[in-house]
Image (tube, rainbow, N blue to C red; front, side, top):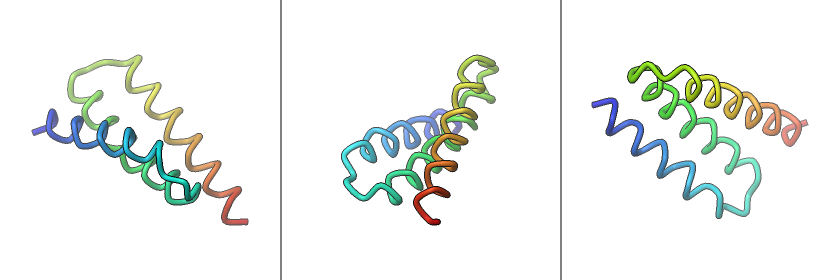
Length: 68
């Protein structure tokens, strides 16, 4: 089941790269990143988990800047 979440997260992040609306792109990055984080924790990969947390936080910070 977590593999499916990882695949969906990867697809969301990959597709969102082409999204021209920056706010929507950041939301999709966060959602895809969360799914990839769930997957990386489930497989016990600490490096990938840390990377996903940093990725999601970066997207959230960018989203907050846009919303101001």
